[in-house]
Image (cartoon, rainbow, N blue to C red; front, side, top):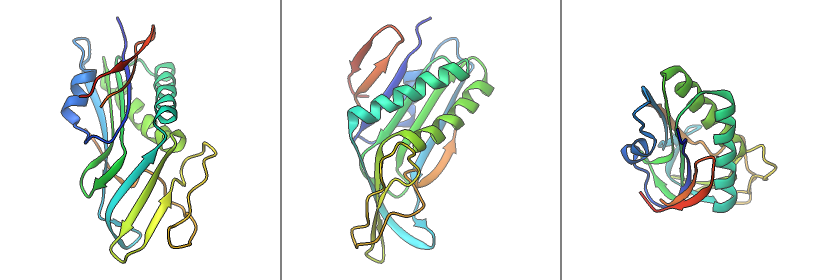
Length: 187
């Protein structure tokens, strides 16, 4: 069996069904997913929108490392890790993870671990725009050594990180099939 690891950082909107289709497999009894979406508030402040920035080659390399670690910990079939960059309005997805597995337990555990690891290791920066006119930039959760960027209003990055959304379990980029890497055209 050939396993696929699909890691994509894109400005395109993320589509859950398309990403699930990428990891679908006749031997899979489950496709486990996580969707991180932009919410309208943080710490009592009204959020208008988020914008994400990433150095795409480095971010996709870190995503592939997560796939490798998932495979070391769980028996899964295909893995898709997608992160949107650019503008992400309220209610829109910024992150989608989909993992197919023979049994649900492996997939669900792998998805939970993968989103936490993504937030801690992938160099993606978030810019939050608030209704009061303030702006915050940073990635406080990243343990990768990347420093949080300062606020546009002279403040300092503070203790919330890139995963500023509610998670829901439920295009172009790098595909890794454990024998070679190739560029995949957009979904």
